[in-house]
Image (cartoon, rainbow, N blue to C red; front, side, top):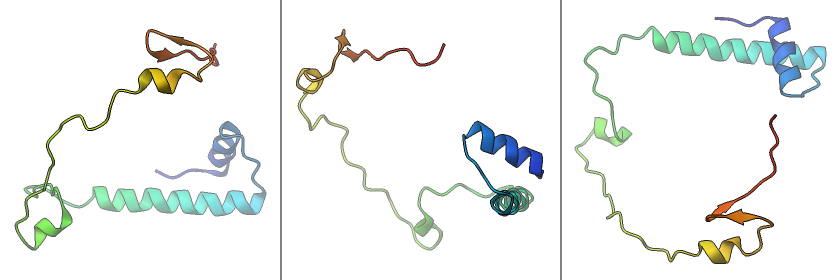
Length: 99
């Protein structure tokens, strides 16, 4: 997959960016370089390769030190929402921004 100059212009427009021709050319090269790298990585045969939880696991057996999943903070929802302009049922109310 590779992008064209028109693709870069469309992406810049969607992102509300104003790119000059030099910047557009540079971005085109960088993004296409990224896509080339992804294609090379996808071409590698990973059949039979176990996923790693930690990179050190390739050289030694490690076990992850996980802490117990217990509540350690007090519920301060009401105190945190005091300064909010609008709250309902414990949720912040915000104006609709997408129609």
